[in-house]
Structures are given as C-alpha cells and as structure tokens.
Length: 194
Ligand code: GAR
Image 1 (cartoon, rainbow, N blue to C red):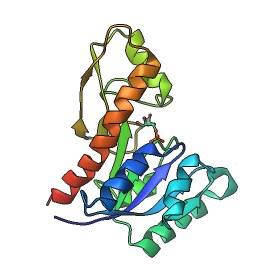
Image 2: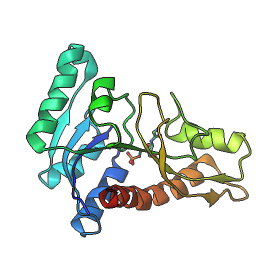
Image 3: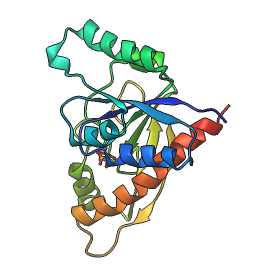
C-alpha cells in the first residue's frame, strides 16, 4: 500500500474534498490532502484552511498561460504532490499537467459515465438531463482524467435506482451521499495498486 500527497482542485462547496480529508483523518486511507487549489474564493476552502492545509486561489485570466501552469507545478513540487483529485472543479486542467500526472489524476462526476458527461455537464444540469432522458439508474463515477471532459478510464461507479417522483434535487442529494463514500474508496484503490 502506498500513501500519496494529494492536491485537490475545487470550485464550490468542497463536500467531496471534506469527505476525503475526513477519511484520511480517520485513517481509512493512508494518503493526505496537503494542498487545495481553487479557481475562485470557493466556500470549500474554509474547511482545509481551518486544518492548516495549504490553499491557493489560482485564476487563469490573471496570469499568462505558462505562468498559470508553472505556479501549480511549483506548488506540487513544494508539497511533493503525487496524486491529484478534482472535486467539483469546473475548469479544465492544462494538458501539460495531465501529461505529467497521467494515471494519477482522478475526477468525480455525479452520473454514470460515459453517459451525461462533457462540457457544461455539472451540478444540477447532470441530474436534470438524467431525469429528462427517463433513465432507470444514476449514480456517481470516479474516473482517471485525460484531455477531454469527463472522459478517461472509469475506476469506480455506484448505481442507484431512480425512484418514482424523483426530482433533480432529490437525485442530487442521494448521489452526493454516495460520492462522499466512493471518493475515499477510489483513493484507497489507487493506494492498493502496484
Ligand atoms: C459533485 O456532485 C461532483 O460530482 C460534481 O460537482 C459536485 C461538487 O460538489 N462534479 C461535476 O459535475 C464534474 N463534471 P462538492 O463541491 O460539494 O464536492
């Protein structure tokens, strides 16, 4: 079993990030989140900050492209990052970082990929699309990140049956609850891989 120094990327409330940090604090996973990067002053930065985890807001439009990448690489170097998790990060990770960390970047998505993924498919949009399509099942997916949105190999998926009278809100709630379980499980799978 390996232990990783994790960098997490967020844009919003960071509840998945919190679930991974809590799992690590309980000793369920050996890896630790040591760096959190956001594309704006996201609410989800508060929890890691309160624990003394290094956080950074890195805004693409404020920096030339090369510097935008180098700032992140310098932070990775400083913290010995060897695993990256995207936890509700709505921007694309630069190709240079994907290339450097291939097979070591995970994303969580609130639907059963390869269906209902791609650009614009995040948050409530996903759950609305699932219901509009009349699907029988939904559920979260953890996958490896490649150069396309929501596209790389699938690591873990959990199915739940769509209930009668289900709304996008109720589905989001039920799927998110499972996300909080399977993201730490996915990290554990990576730890146990050769
Ligand atoms: C989660 O439901 C995650 O699956 C989704 O954003 C939410 C973030 O919630 N990600 C995507 O839709 C990616 N395409 P959180 O900030 O509370 O973890």
